[in-house]
Amino acid sequence: MRDHMLTAIDAAAGLEALDAVRIEALGKQGRVTQLLKTLGGMTAEERQEQGPRINGLREAVATAIASRKAVLETVALDMRLASETIDLTLPADAPLAGTIHPVSQVMDELAEIFADLGFAVATGPEIEDDWYNFTALNIPETHPARAMHDTFYFPDEVDPGTGAVTKRTVLRTHTSPVQIRAMQAAGGNTPIRIIAPGRTYRSDSDATHTPMFHQVEGLVIDKGITLGHLKWTLETFLKAYFERDDIVLRLRPSYFPFTEPSAEIDVGYSVVKGKRVIGGADGWMEVLGSGMVHRTVLEAGGYDPDVWQGFAFGCGIDRLAMLKYGMDDLRAFFDGDVRWLKHYGFSSLDVPTLSGGVGA
Ligand code: PHE
Image (tube, rainbow, N blue to C red):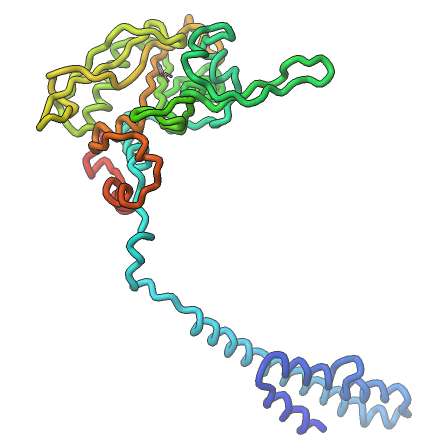
């Protein structure tokens, strides 16, 4: 019986066949198990003789099964590895070869340039509380700027008992709410240097406006911050971003509820082969909104405006990309047309780096 079992174990061609042999020998009704049960009915002498024999048989069978199992498992794994190969050296199908979208590339460039100036990257939610998007930024309920933003509102959350509005949310109309979130996170007593790139939404659509677009916010809070710091920072950033030294800025007085004073930043351009190119001073192009953080906004963020000052700026990222890389219809950014992406997209290896030339 022993030889018969050991032969069957060695002959088992697969894990299932081996398991069948195991059940036949060591299972509840198995032949070895049955033999073990006979020990109970034996005389002491018989048991002394048969005990070691039967137990030895059980051990030999169990060991043989375990080693056969290990062999079969190795074979099964080898077969799987052999059948599941993938040749990474094969060329990918051209239409599937992805590129980095210019917006992503520009966001990476911004992060790199501003990191060089000591700025961290901050983020906030795209579905934003009305308070962060407007009220905390000194845009109260009745303020005309609310209408100017062509806001996408969500239905109000209402208290079923009283009918009072408990929560009002919007798709954020700008990245400025991240100013408030960054101030709150910093706790009202530490300097802040952040940029906040991300998606923003307004109900607007033509060649230069899409309902979803991208902005980058900048915020600096410290003691003794002046408009001079703002101008230097933006000039340094724009020179690094456009990779040229002949960048000229013009600060034009403007109005934003959350900054005082406010300035629109115009950048000088020159005309090359009938196209406007940033740099030089043939004319002025409006590129950024900016200003000194309003007292009310500092207070909403938990900062004492008699101690802390700051500047902020906001800028369309899509526009920055168009100005640097020469696309002229914003809508194409979001069409997902593979030909456009192939033409304007970047290689995934084309990571903007300081040593590669985008630093400040
Ligand atoms: N949030 C403003 C806009 O979307 C831009 C801005 C940001 C202006 C910060 C001043 C300071 O138009």
